[in-house]
Length: 157
Image (cartoon, rainbow, N blue to C red; front, side):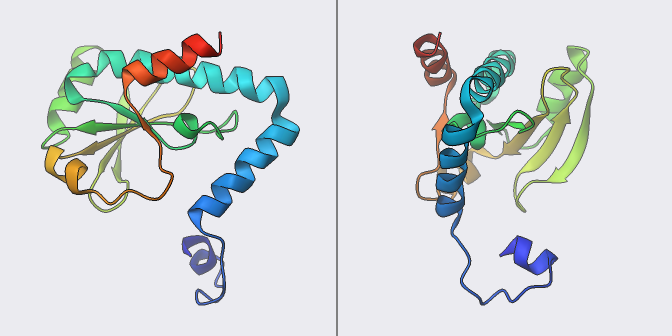
């Protein structure tokens, strides 16, 4: 719907759901991505795990295409963090000498921090613990903690 609105198309027309778009992306990656996509996905997941371990005190969850397995080589690594506000996350990043910039708000409630990582675009989405608990989950949405990402990396080695 957002894309239709941006393209000035009729929002009321039948559009695929997020789940249908993600299923098409999985099909595309399966057919055309091959070994290069699998290697890129593995590298993205390793990058995510590195950041999740650095940000462990904020209960990080890997979300989006990297978690679900349909991310392309230019997809962003999206990590959801639980904190009452983004300031403690920003202070931790600054204390570690990590360059980042504020990206505003990801979905109206999450504060977005964009980390300068040489490997991939890393998006940190900071939500309050209460918002995380009450956040509506889209059908099929994948959210992985560090142990789950580590297990995925171990099975794809």
